[in-house]
Image (tube, rainbow, N blue to C red; front, top):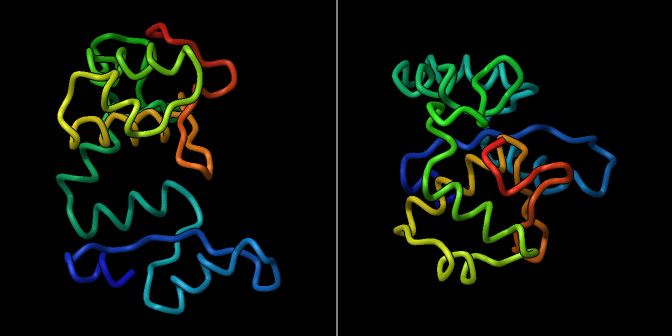
Length: 144
């Protein structure tokens, strides 16, 4: 939280049960000043209030594979590009960590991180607790 604040970044968090052991971290972030959100619509509304251009980009039909928001199997979507294809192909052989993905994908670190985030949010890949990424169940290395 302090790193985000030091960079002028807002922290959003989904609150957890007050008595659940797995919600201690998110609830601590709330105590420390993070903004609570309960669904994507609420998050987009908060983002639009803070930065209308960012919210417009996130909610455009070319953004993510969220039901009703774009189609990542469409090459014109902006999601399935060369870097995305390389990541999906690399992960088709099994789970890889960031270092292995960096070696497998010809992209700068910022572009790779953005692609990993886009694919994670779209439900195409999953990041495990050990830091390795793998294709989500039912996902394929192809465009769709």
